[in-house]
Length: 551
Image (cartoon, rainbow, N blue to C red):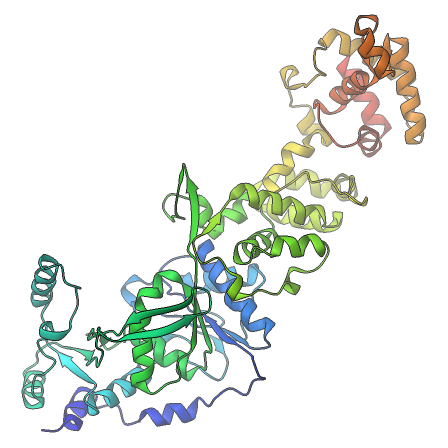
């Protein structure tokens, strides 16, 4: 019996050869240095921030080089597939400003000439290559039962050996062709394993584009190529897909570093040119005095949905991730404050070799910088999109008075140092609610923040006097002079030196009087410019609030 007969018995429906697919997917016609990268998630759950991080690195590498960025769905583990996960992946990447040149565009739709881009639809391709390996004596059917595999693992663990199927533990590796055919015809269950030619005494030198030069022992593991359900393992499928799809750079998480010996070996055995590999650092979180991996279970910020719910603009999250990807981003942003972040040149060799630390405080700082540069119209638009879903009351108040709301969002926006009031949209309500009568009127007496050491009775005395002197239609300088005149009449001073020298001679400073007016109109001690607030509120509202305060 020949190996060809064995291969035909295992794969009777396969009538193509690897050369058919190599010709079907020709080498891409791209300019020198163009990178072909991919994002290749399994549809076993919804997207998390680590996925966005990995995809962003791949997308930037491809786009900046004039290459191709594609989406491949690795769904060979169909028992764990989650309904809606593919659409979630596509929507998430699009929302974070990443578009795919090729690949899946929906649950069953795709674009590009190198598909199918869903591994479960490429079964014939994998079987073609597996059949060819069997014919060449480089793969074999393994009839190990689950019980035999468990016993093998227990023996290896007891002897402190590397677990797996290799050497003396690969008990069906040297089974004769005749015996293998007989067992298959008898209906014995089997999988297809690689007949590894590796020698762990031999080391392979390798250059990782992020980690740098490294070396590792050759793999001698007879890994599974085709599972009992006829679908390939991740290892086998990714090597064939990346080769046929012309992937030049495999950019993935560093948890795959341990699989590199297997993957390099597969490319060599299949006769493919190896892609370049770049293993990106794991996103870490400070936990007390130590660092740990950002956890889907423990950390809400690991879920992409967290950023939407909190109201972080997507550009803020991307800019923060670029800070993690390359520490030079912060300096670049300082030198190019108004540039589009797409202009920043991401460099793989400048990525951190160890875990990237995720810091919400830093994210907030980045986000404040992003929002403060937005025009009022953009802030308004993004905020109402968020509020419509997460704060219906604010959505109604904001949209009913659109021009009024845009004036609020435009406070101190147009100067050289725009205000940094918000890091995320769920902070907006607290910062601007006093502009809206229905919210302002809900606040209680104890919510009012008076100037330090000022009693409510004194604040009311100030407001009674100021209400008589208040004029709406004046410029800012005249407005302040009127305020100062009231303050002096009430025993306050504008002379800081005099107040420091004999504080007992005065009720306080003019700033205290302004603070009382601020408290009457906003109930807050810290707000943007008071004159601007009064002009946005309008004369009628200002007079009504001053009057109500004294009641």
